[in-house]
Length: 358
Ligand code: NAP
Ligand code: ZN
Image (cartoon, rainbow, N blue to C red; front, side):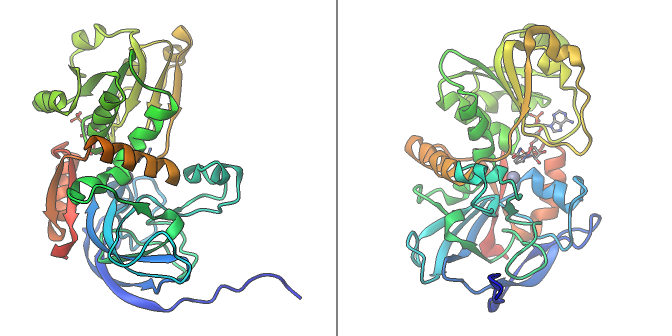
Protein backbone atom coordinates (compact mmCIF):
# COMPACT_ATOMS: atom_id res chain seq x y z
CA UNK A 1 0.00 0.00 0.00
CA UNK A 2 1.30 3.43 -0.85
CA UNK A 3 2.02 5.77 2.03
CA UNK A 4 1.83 8.86 -0.15
CA UNK A 5 -0.74 11.24 1.26
CA UNK A 6 -3.17 12.65 -1.22
CA UNK A 7 -3.72 16.28 -0.46
CA UNK A 8 -7.44 17.06 -0.61
CA UNK A 9 -8.27 20.15 -2.61
CA UNK A 10 -9.52 22.73 -0.12
CA UNK A 11 -12.74 24.64 -0.61
CA UNK A 12 -12.30 28.09 -2.13
CA UNK A 13 -13.66 31.55 -1.49
CA UNK A 14 -13.54 34.48 -3.85
CA UNK A 15 -11.46 37.56 -3.27
CA UNK A 16 -10.32 40.48 -5.34
CA UNK A 17 -7.06 42.26 -5.92
CA UNK A 18 -4.88 43.91 -8.53
CA UNK A 19 -2.88 41.83 -11.00
CA UNK A 20 -0.53 42.23 -13.94
CA UNK A 21 -1.43 39.93 -16.82
CA UNK A 22 1.90 40.32 -18.64
CA UNK A 23 5.28 42.03 -18.31
CA UNK A 24 4.01 44.99 -20.28
CA UNK A 25 0.51 45.43 -18.87
CA UNK A 26 -0.46 47.76 -16.04
CA UNK A 27 -1.84 46.41 -12.79
CA UNK A 28 -5.63 46.20 -12.96
CA UNK A 29 -8.55 44.78 -10.92
CA UNK A 30 -8.62 40.97 -10.79
CA UNK A 31 -10.89 38.40 -9.11
CA UNK A 32 -9.46 35.11 -7.89
CA UNK A 33 -9.86 32.39 -5.24
CA UNK A 34 -8.25 31.83 -1.85
CA UNK A 35 -8.45 28.50 -0.03
CA UNK A 36 -10.81 28.17 2.93
CA UNK A 37 -8.67 27.90 6.08
CA UNK A 38 -7.17 24.42 6.59
CA UNK A 39 -6.65 23.22 10.22
CA UNK A 40 -3.34 25.13 10.57
CA UNK A 41 -4.38 28.23 8.60
CA UNK A 42 -5.09 31.84 9.50
CA UNK A 43 -7.45 33.85 7.30
CA UNK A 44 -6.67 37.56 7.20
CA UNK A 45 -8.51 40.66 5.98
CA UNK A 46 -5.73 42.84 4.58
CA UNK A 47 -5.65 46.41 5.91
CA UNK A 48 -2.36 47.65 4.40
CA UNK A 49 0.18 46.32 1.94
CA UNK A 50 3.57 47.95 1.30
CA UNK A 51 4.93 48.41 -2.22
CA UNK A 52 8.39 46.86 -2.61
CA UNK A 53 10.66 47.37 -5.62
CA UNK A 54 10.67 43.55 -5.89
CA UNK A 55 6.95 43.82 -6.76
CA UNK A 56 7.89 46.02 -9.71
CA UNK A 57 10.79 43.75 -10.80
CA UNK A 58 8.35 40.80 -10.76
CA UNK A 59 5.45 42.58 -12.47
CA UNK A 60 7.80 43.55 -15.31
CA UNK A 61 9.55 40.14 -15.37
CA UNK A 62 12.94 41.76 -14.79
CA UNK A 63 14.22 38.64 -13.01
CA UNK A 64 12.91 36.42 -15.85
CA UNK A 65 10.89 34.16 -13.52
CA UNK A 66 7.42 35.71 -13.48
CA UNK A 67 4.33 33.59 -14.12
CA UNK A 68 1.20 35.60 -14.95
CA UNK A 69 -1.16 36.73 -13.63
CA UNK A 70 1.04 38.27 -10.92
CA UNK A 71 -0.66 39.68 -7.82
CA UNK A 72 2.29 41.26 -5.98
CA UNK A 73 2.57 42.34 -2.35
CA UNK A 74 4.56 40.88 0.55
CA UNK A 75 4.36 43.56 3.23
CA UNK A 76 0.97 42.65 4.62
CA UNK A 77 -0.79 43.83 7.78
CA UNK A 78 -4.32 42.68 8.47
CA UNK A 79 -6.88 41.44 10.92
CA UNK A 80 -7.61 37.75 11.50
CA UNK A 81 -11.14 36.78 10.44
CA UNK A 82 -11.04 32.98 10.90
CA UNK A 83 -8.62 30.27 12.01
CA UNK A 84 -8.39 26.50 11.50
CA UNK A 85 -8.97 24.01 14.37
CA UNK A 86 -5.26 23.55 15.08
CA UNK A 87 -4.38 27.23 15.26
CA UNK A 88 -3.20 28.24 18.73
CA UNK A 89 -1.35 31.52 18.18
CA UNK A 90 -4.14 33.60 16.59
CA UNK A 91 -7.86 34.18 17.02
CA UNK A 92 -10.35 36.27 15.06
CA UNK A 93 -9.85 39.98 15.72
CA UNK A 94 -6.07 39.75 16.25
CA UNK A 95 -3.68 41.81 14.13
CA UNK A 96 -1.40 39.70 11.94
CA UNK A 97 1.52 40.26 9.59
CA UNK A 98 2.67 38.33 6.53
CA UNK A 99 6.00 38.93 4.82
CA UNK A 100 7.72 37.35 1.83
CA UNK A 101 7.49 33.68 2.90
CA UNK A 102 4.30 31.62 3.32
CA UNK A 103 5.80 28.10 3.46
CA UNK A 104 9.02 26.06 3.27
CA UNK A 105 9.91 22.36 3.56
CA UNK A 106 10.51 22.82 7.35
CA UNK A 107 12.85 19.81 7.42
CA UNK A 108 16.08 20.87 5.68
CA UNK A 109 19.02 22.01 7.82
CA UNK A 110 18.33 25.67 7.00
CA UNK A 111 14.65 25.52 7.95
CA UNK A 112 15.56 23.72 11.16
CA UNK A 113 17.99 26.52 11.92
CA UNK A 114 15.19 29.08 11.47
CA UNK A 115 16.51 30.18 8.08
CA UNK A 116 13.38 29.46 6.03
CA UNK A 117 14.50 32.04 3.47
CA UNK A 118 17.40 29.71 2.64
CA UNK A 119 15.21 26.54 2.48
CA UNK A 120 16.99 23.91 0.38
CA UNK A 121 13.73 23.08 -1.41
CA UNK A 122 13.12 26.76 -2.11
CA UNK A 123 10.70 28.62 0.13
CA UNK A 124 7.17 29.37 -1.03
CA UNK A 125 7.00 33.08 -1.73
CA UNK A 126 3.89 35.07 -0.88
CA UNK A 127 3.51 35.60 -4.63
CA UNK A 128 4.91 34.04 -7.82
CA UNK A 129 5.67 30.63 -6.23
CA UNK A 130 3.93 27.31 -6.99
CA UNK A 131 0.80 27.06 -4.80
CA UNK A 132 0.69 23.50 -3.42
CA UNK A 133 -2.91 23.90 -2.23
CA UNK A 134 -4.74 25.36 -5.21
CA UNK A 135 -2.30 24.74 -8.06
CA UNK A 136 -1.05 27.64 -10.15
CA UNK A 137 1.00 30.30 -8.42
CA UNK A 138 0.67 32.04 -5.07
CA UNK A 139 -0.96 35.47 -5.25
CA UNK A 140 0.13 38.25 -2.94
CA UNK A 141 -1.06 41.09 -0.80
CA UNK A 142 -2.44 43.61 -3.28
CA UNK A 143 -5.77 42.01 -2.35
CA UNK A 144 -8.62 41.95 0.16
CA UNK A 145 -7.82 38.68 1.94
CA UNK A 146 -5.10 36.06 2.31
CA UNK A 147 -4.89 32.62 3.96
CA UNK A 148 -1.53 31.59 5.44
CA UNK A 149 -0.23 28.74 7.59
CA UNK A 150 0.09 30.01 11.18
CA UNK A 151 3.81 29.18 11.30
CA UNK A 152 4.42 31.94 8.74
CA UNK A 153 2.17 34.58 10.31
CA UNK A 154 3.77 37.30 12.46
CA UNK A 155 2.50 38.79 15.68
CA UNK A 156 2.06 42.60 15.55
CA UNK A 157 2.80 44.39 18.84
CA UNK A 158 2.64 47.96 17.51
CA UNK A 159 -1.14 48.45 17.32
CA UNK A 160 -1.38 52.06 16.15
CA UNK A 161 0.69 52.99 13.11
CA UNK A 162 -0.24 49.91 11.11
CA UNK A 163 0.61 51.43 7.71
CA UNK A 164 4.08 52.20 9.06
CA UNK A 165 4.52 48.63 10.30
CA UNK A 166 3.66 46.95 6.98
CA UNK A 167 7.03 47.74 5.28
CA UNK A 168 8.90 46.14 8.18
CA UNK A 169 7.74 42.76 6.82
CA UNK A 170 10.16 43.04 3.89
CA UNK A 171 12.17 46.29 3.94
CA UNK A 172 12.63 45.97 7.70
CA UNK A 173 13.76 42.35 7.88
CA UNK A 174 15.89 42.58 4.70
CA UNK A 175 18.03 45.28 6.31
CA UNK A 176 17.83 44.02 9.93
CA UNK A 177 19.04 40.51 9.08
CA UNK A 178 22.41 41.41 7.48
CA UNK A 179 23.05 44.14 10.07
CA UNK A 180 22.63 41.48 12.77
CA UNK A 181 24.44 38.69 10.91
CA UNK A 182 27.52 40.88 10.38
CA UNK A 183 27.22 42.14 14.00
CA UNK A 184 26.90 45.81 13.25
CA UNK A 185 27.00 47.98 16.36
CA UNK A 186 28.73 50.64 18.41
CA UNK A 187 32.15 51.77 17.26
CA UNK A 188 31.56 50.72 13.65
CA UNK A 189 31.31 52.84 10.54
CA UNK A 190 28.42 51.57 8.41
CA UNK A 191 27.36 52.70 4.95
CA UNK A 192 23.84 52.39 3.54
CA UNK A 193 23.61 52.84 -0.24
CA UNK A 194 20.30 54.23 -1.58
CA UNK A 195 17.57 55.98 0.37
CA UNK A 196 14.46 54.11 -0.78
CA UNK A 197 12.23 51.64 1.07
CA UNK A 198 15.05 49.32 2.17
CA UNK A 199 17.63 52.08 2.55
CA UNK A 200 15.59 54.24 4.93
CA UNK A 201 14.95 51.21 7.16
CA UNK A 202 18.67 50.37 6.97
CA UNK A 203 19.52 53.88 8.20
CA UNK A 204 17.01 53.70 11.08
CA UNK A 205 18.06 50.20 12.17
CA UNK A 206 21.83 50.68 11.88
CA UNK A 207 21.51 53.91 13.91
CA UNK A 208 19.36 52.10 16.52
CA UNK A 209 22.09 49.43 16.77
CA UNK A 210 24.58 52.15 17.68
CA UNK A 211 26.68 52.35 14.50
CA UNK A 212 28.05 55.51 12.89
CA UNK A 213 25.84 55.63 9.78
CA UNK A 214 26.79 57.15 6.44
CA UNK A 215 24.08 57.32 3.79
CA UNK A 216 25.02 57.29 0.10
CA UNK A 217 22.45 58.81 -2.21
CA UNK A 218 22.13 59.95 -5.81
CA UNK A 219 19.41 62.40 -4.74
CA UNK A 220 20.77 65.65 -3.19
CA UNK A 221 17.20 66.49 -2.13
CA UNK A 222 17.17 63.60 0.36
CA UNK A 223 20.08 64.92 2.42
CA UNK A 224 18.06 66.45 5.25
CA UNK A 225 15.68 63.52 5.45
CA UNK A 226 18.61 61.14 5.74
CA UNK A 227 19.85 63.01 8.81
CA UNK A 228 16.38 63.09 10.33
CA UNK A 229 16.10 59.33 9.77
CA UNK A 230 19.35 58.74 11.70
CA UNK A 231 22.29 59.14 9.30
CA UNK A 232 25.32 60.85 10.85
CA UNK A 233 26.80 61.76 7.45
CA UNK A 234 25.39 61.93 3.93
CA UNK A 235 27.46 61.45 0.78
CA UNK A 236 26.26 62.37 -2.71
CA UNK A 237 27.56 59.32 -4.53
CA UNK A 238 27.99 61.11 -7.86
CA UNK A 239 30.60 63.39 -6.27
CA UNK A 240 33.99 61.63 -6.63
CA UNK A 241 35.65 64.02 -4.23
CA UNK A 242 33.12 63.31 -1.44
CA UNK A 243 33.40 59.56 -2.11
CA UNK A 244 37.22 59.67 -2.04
CA UNK A 245 37.26 61.11 1.48
CA UNK A 246 35.82 57.82 2.79
CA UNK A 247 38.33 55.46 1.09
CA UNK A 248 39.23 52.32 3.08
CA UNK A 249 37.19 53.37 6.10
CA UNK A 250 33.99 51.30 6.34
CA UNK A 251 33.52 48.20 8.48
CA UNK A 252 30.34 47.38 6.59
CA UNK A 253 28.35 48.67 3.60
CA UNK A 254 24.79 47.59 2.77
CA UNK A 255 23.82 48.19 -0.87
CA UNK A 256 20.04 48.52 -1.40
CA UNK A 257 20.10 49.95 -4.94
CA UNK A 258 17.49 48.62 -7.38
CA UNK A 259 19.19 49.70 -10.64
CA UNK A 260 22.55 49.35 -12.37
CA UNK A 261 25.41 51.17 -10.60
CA UNK A 262 29.15 50.75 -10.04
CA UNK A 263 29.93 48.47 -7.08
CA UNK A 264 33.68 49.02 -7.35
CA UNK A 265 33.41 52.65 -6.26
CA UNK A 266 31.77 51.47 -3.01
CA UNK A 267 34.12 48.51 -2.49
CA UNK A 268 37.00 51.03 -2.52
CA UNK A 269 35.51 52.55 0.63
CA UNK A 270 35.54 49.27 2.62
CA UNK A 271 38.49 48.87 4.99
CA UNK A 272 40.73 45.81 5.24
CA UNK A 273 38.70 42.68 6.06
CA UNK A 274 35.50 44.71 5.89
CA UNK A 275 32.34 43.53 4.14
CA UNK A 276 29.95 44.86 1.55
CA UNK A 277 26.56 43.14 1.33
CA UNK A 278 24.17 43.32 -1.59
CA UNK A 279 20.44 43.22 -0.95
CA UNK A 280 19.41 45.26 -4.00
CA UNK A 281 18.82 43.04 -7.03
CA UNK A 282 19.03 45.03 -10.29
CA UNK A 283 17.88 43.46 -13.53
CA UNK A 284 21.41 43.33 -15.02
CA UNK A 285 24.39 41.79 -13.19
CA UNK A 286 27.12 44.18 -12.00
CA UNK A 287 30.82 44.07 -12.89
CA UNK A 288 33.10 43.35 -9.93
CA UNK A 289 36.79 44.06 -10.48
CA UNK A 290 38.77 41.30 -8.71
CA UNK A 291 41.24 43.91 -7.44
CA UNK A 292 38.38 45.70 -5.66
CA UNK A 293 38.34 42.66 -3.36
CA UNK A 294 41.92 41.38 -3.52
CA UNK A 295 43.50 44.52 -2.15
CA UNK A 296 42.49 44.91 1.50
CA UNK A 297 41.06 41.33 1.58
CA UNK A 298 37.53 42.73 1.27
CA UNK A 299 34.46 40.52 1.27
CA UNK A 300 31.40 40.86 -0.95
CA UNK A 301 28.26 38.97 0.12
CA UNK A 302 24.50 38.85 -0.40
CA UNK A 303 21.55 38.53 1.95
CA UNK A 304 17.94 37.49 1.43
CA UNK A 305 15.12 38.81 3.66
CA UNK A 306 15.30 36.84 6.96
CA UNK A 307 13.74 33.83 8.69
CA UNK A 308 10.40 33.86 10.48
CA UNK A 309 11.82 33.92 14.02
CA UNK A 310 14.19 36.73 13.07
CA UNK A 311 11.32 38.65 11.46
CA UNK A 312 9.42 38.44 14.76
CA UNK A 313 12.57 39.52 16.60
CA UNK A 314 12.87 42.54 14.24
CA UNK A 315 9.18 43.47 14.72
CA UNK A 316 9.62 43.33 18.50
CA UNK A 317 12.91 45.30 18.29
CA UNK A 318 11.08 48.01 16.30
CA UNK A 319 8.00 48.01 18.58
CA UNK A 320 10.20 48.49 21.67
CA UNK A 321 11.97 51.46 20.09
CA UNK A 322 9.03 53.03 18.27
CA UNK A 323 10.61 52.36 14.87
CA UNK A 324 8.25 52.28 11.89
CA UNK A 325 8.60 53.03 8.20
CA UNK A 326 8.03 56.54 6.80
CA UNK A 327 5.17 55.95 4.40
CA UNK A 328 3.01 57.61 1.79
CA UNK A 329 -0.40 55.94 1.86
CA UNK A 330 -1.97 55.49 -1.57
CA UNK A 331 -5.26 54.14 -2.85
CA UNK A 332 -5.16 50.91 -4.84
CA UNK A 333 -5.94 52.64 -8.13
CA UNK A 334 -2.78 54.78 -7.81
CA UNK A 335 -0.45 51.76 -7.93
CA UNK A 336 0.75 52.19 -11.52
CA UNK A 337 1.60 55.83 -10.85
CA UNK A 338 3.42 54.77 -7.67
CA UNK A 339 5.59 52.36 -9.72
CA UNK A 340 6.62 55.18 -12.06
CA UNK A 341 7.49 57.38 -9.09
CA UNK A 342 9.47 54.54 -7.49
CA UNK A 343 11.51 54.27 -10.71
CA UNK A 344 12.29 57.99 -10.44
CA UNK A 345 13.44 57.47 -6.79
CA UNK A 346 10.52 59.70 -5.83
CA UNK A 347 9.21 57.88 -2.78
CA UNK A 348 9.37 59.01 0.86
CA UNK A 349 10.11 56.34 1.74
CA UNK A 350 7.63 53.55 1.12
CA UNK A 351 4.28 53.53 -0.65
CA UNK A 352 1.67 51.62 1.32
CA UNK A 353 -1.69 50.69 -0.18
CA UNK A 354 -4.77 51.32 1.99
CA UNK A 355 -6.71 48.19 1.12
CA UNK A 356 -10.04 49.76 2.14
CA UNK A 357 -9.77 51.64 -1.19
CA UNK A 358 -9.93 48.41 -3.23
P1 NAP B 1 13.33 51.63 -3.85
O1 NAP B 1 12.42 52.08 -2.76
O2 NAP B 1 12.97 51.94 -5.25
O3 NAP B 1 14.78 52.22 -3.50
C1 NAP B 1 15.90 52.04 -4.31
C2 NAP B 1 16.83 53.25 -4.16
O4 NAP B 1 17.99 52.99 -4.93
C3 NAP B 1 16.28 54.54 -4.72
O5 NAP B 1 15.44 55.23 -3.84
C4 NAP B 1 17.55 55.33 -5.00
O6 NAP B 1 18.03 55.94 -3.80
C5 NAP B 1 18.53 54.23 -5.38
N1 NAP B 1 18.68 54.18 -6.85
C6 NAP B 1 17.72 53.98 -7.77
N2 NAP B 1 18.23 53.97 -9.01
C7 NAP B 1 19.55 54.17 -8.86
C8 NAP B 1 20.66 54.24 -9.77
N3 NAP B 1 20.45 54.13 -11.10
N4 NAP B 1 21.89 54.44 -9.27
C9 NAP B 1 22.10 54.54 -7.96
N5 NAP B 1 21.09 54.51 -7.04
C10 NAP B 1 19.86 54.31 -7.50
O7 NAP B 1 13.53 50.05 -3.78
P2 NAP B 1 13.44 49.05 -2.52
O8 NAP B 1 12.07 48.56 -2.39
O9 NAP B 1 14.14 49.65 -1.38
O10 NAP B 1 14.29 47.80 -3.09
C11 NAP B 1 15.65 47.97 -3.42
C12 NAP B 1 16.19 46.71 -4.08
O11 NAP B 1 16.25 45.66 -3.12
C13 NAP B 1 15.35 46.17 -5.21
O12 NAP B 1 16.19 45.68 -6.24
C14 NAP B 1 14.57 45.05 -4.57
O13 NAP B 1 14.14 44.06 -5.48
C15 NAP B 1 15.61 44.51 -3.65
N6 NAP B 1 15.10 43.71 -2.52
C16 NAP B 1 15.88 42.68 -2.10
C17 NAP B 1 15.49 41.92 -1.02
C18 NAP B 1 16.38 40.82 -0.53
O14 NAP B 1 15.90 39.98 0.23
N7 NAP B 1 17.65 40.81 -0.86
C19 NAP B 1 14.28 42.19 -0.40
C20 NAP B 1 13.52 43.26 -0.85
C21 NAP B 1 13.94 44.02 -1.91
P3 NAP B 1 18.70 57.41 -3.84
O15 NAP B 1 17.66 58.32 -4.41
O16 NAP B 1 19.00 57.66 -2.41
O17 NAP B 1 19.95 57.31 -4.67
ZN1 ZN C 1 10.14 43.14 -0.77
